[in-house]
Length: 304
Ligand code: PSU
Ligand code: MN
Image (tube, rainbow, N blue to C red; front, side, top):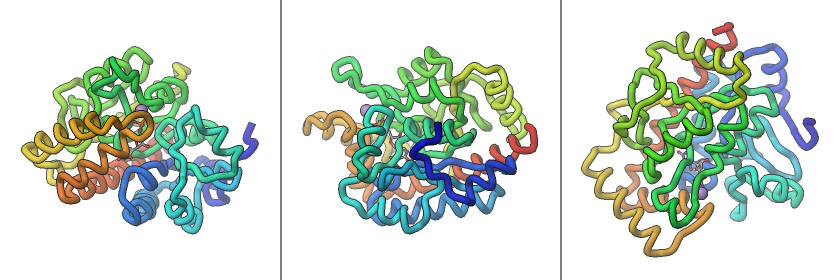
């Protein structure tokens, strides 16, 4: 069952001893942030997870192996390879079989984490239903992976470039609960609030851990979205958000961007339009999510 999997000694020792482990994805490293900020972010996230009592397991595909706990050298090679594939579930096996490099989206990371026995995962924002999904059919594989793998994803909601209302509806349809940490609202990635409700609110990590444990214990089979809004002081100002988001979406449609290229294009366009501010915001929310994920994994390991 674990054919092709290469779990690092550090991660496998932690899993065997039932110590807290947090999975980290690599698409944000290769496609979500400009080089070399992606690799810097990845190592900073690992340090944050460690500093909050859990073992980081950064995930990626290279040289025919599914790596759970990439070394710094492997991470650098993944980020430096210009042709790293953005992996979800549909292109995962072909890339693995080719021996080429692949970075894992939320969808692919959920699959690997579930297989490796990791229950908590930190990312920036999950993918979701795109705003023009009626014409394009573009719905992120992240949502369907959340419906298949019992892993808790700590995120700042779904990326603001999406149709958040439809994304929340779809999660409900798929049986994936949204648990808000100290919030009643589904966050909008760069901003704290989308105006959409979460399924349940928790005001402590212990209460959250207990609910996640209960969800997994029931055997519902689905994952959990832990909605962790960006701290107030790090939010993108509303005026900047409104102006640049509309422009980025208009540019994507004018240039006919489609498929897997859409999300990276929009994130990069936001960076250009905000003169780098969107990247600072993205890094801040990633750090916050890594910290909460480590605390959640620790509470769950204590039996929460
Ligand atoms: N969060 C970020 N930056 C990112 C992503 C998430 O802060 O780049 C990535 C994740 O890997 C997510 C992917 O799974 O974007 C979604 O891509 P798509 O919409 O094509 O499914
Ligand atoms: Mn897509």
